[in-house]
Length: 239
Image (cartoon, rainbow, N blue to C red; front, side):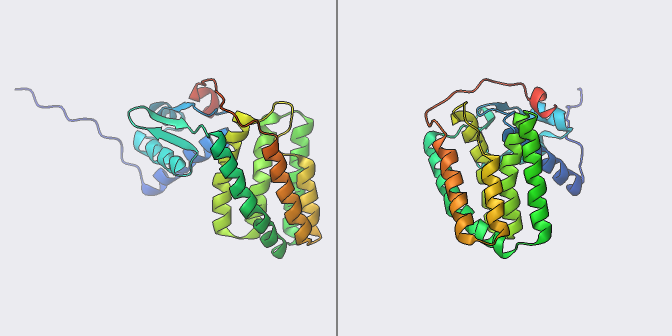
């Protein structure tokens, strides 16, 4: 009688190496979302992602589950993982949450202001302007989100920073689905005004500017159901 074949097991990967690959997948998918290269509703095939990143299905599944916990990916039984498709109601809740925490983040940022941090903010503003001038829409979208993350990092409030990282990724999906195409997603001039208020340590002004900035972004959204075309993952994550 022929010996029974055993299923092929995945090669063992050191814990540190596995953690690094999970992080790479998470960052790759998140960056593609922030740059509007991955559309809401795009299927995230485990095998295809594994080939792109040289990772096992176990590691890919771990990364996708973490992203699902953050609301960036949705996992459907018997169908797999997809880039989340936020509803108009989701959009309103995300921006309501941002309006609650980002003015407080600015307060903390002003308390922690330093010449080094101001230099970093100015350098970031310069990168935003350069991307805008060369017409690099993907970089502009990514840098806009990174500005808000940078202010949160400056504030030194790890809980707020963690919440905001998730909210910014969700915001990018929302903007991709619902933005009116004739308006910018996040104005560089608004960011510059916020930095000026931080430099002057004017908390009331900085809070007001951040709040009005977020309100304007939301006002530029056309909150109705939208559809997204399908993309090949290799064209996006392998770029």
